[in-house]
Length: 561
Image: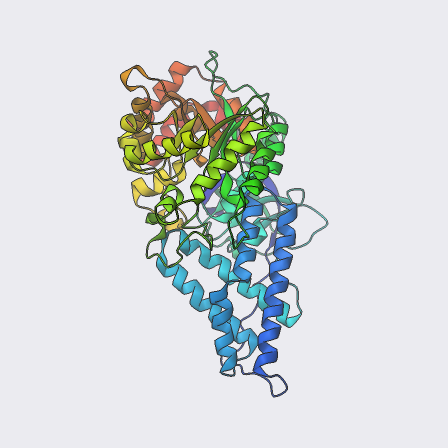
């Protein structure tokens, strides 16, 4: 039995046969020139038409997707019309280069530029190369790269998956995802979690396995095995028998002794919210409003925004909906708001900070939120991302008050906000920890990079201490301001127990994770969760913190989590 260890990013124990992603579009020959029958003007027109076709096809797929998948498709569609990409290719065509070779070289240049910027922008490099291949395929009149078709379910294996591919996976056909590359916050990982598919990334060598190979995938342990043994087959059967338990959340997040821990959903729009409500989420802990702004060259009107927000509010009448104001910048550039030439976008003008350089956008967004709230029965809370100081928190609270919003809060994702939580929470009513960014900033480790996966985990004791400091700050001076977690950490059932023990009030996650988190929380008392939190904080590193806590939670092994 041959094993391929990787990084587990979405739990599940599956046995099935694999299908490899088709090999990528081949590179046009170096130095390929325009044919004698084709003018530069005709080639440029053909290139623009191909790019437009790719854009329209991705946009059409986005219309039927939701949540993370919709956002990925819309962002990739935008790249197909990127002016830097098309102008670069046009200049090469004007010098006699063929359209296919021109877009290939222009794509390489743009991708390299984004990669060198580092941080979030480096992740956009993958989008450029994906779009480049799709445009070349369109010019050749051949199918674009994509998920293989099959009449029977299979385990999808690839070196890595393009954003547009991960966004349109059919969970009825794909049993699990396995990639040789990628990291714990890659597109593959994020989409797998949102679809509830077992997934392992960074498993070197799996992309060389032949189609039809039977393998065992353990998405929690991060393991792929060829020719599964009897124990693995039994584990897969047990996972299947527990599927009903892990698929249904009864809408009551609580510990074994009745301590309430409301379990909320992360959503990006009305369709997401309706699906989360159908899965009995107790509200929304993170409404990512930037999804309403993607695929636009201009800012949406107050009325357009209000309609989008109300579609989410209406899915949860009488329940909490925590809305994050526009988190543009870094990996979510908007042409009317962000500067794509920043040397370090992850540390640049993003989130709340865009109000420094483009005042008015945030003010109008708050007006739209207030307008939508007037006609809604939801309990609306509003928070700003990338708050670093108490002064910024006070300014945001004053903007909310001016708009008629009575429940302002902040995202805690910058370490300074956790360290000064007491001062910040004097200015606002609540905080929500964005553990994805908090971890990468605390550990100085780009969350997209596979080689830094061991650093970039919220199990790091340093990150858990920042969570604890935020809770301590919320309780200072006799106050007890709510603190939630809306990052990926909340979707890890073992870590959810630790966060509860640290004093976090609510947990928000992809809706498909609700049932698993609820099932594990109900096996521990609050006192036991507090002891496990102390245990994790005492660990010398993230690996041992995770292992020590999991050892005390046998339910995880029983359920395959």
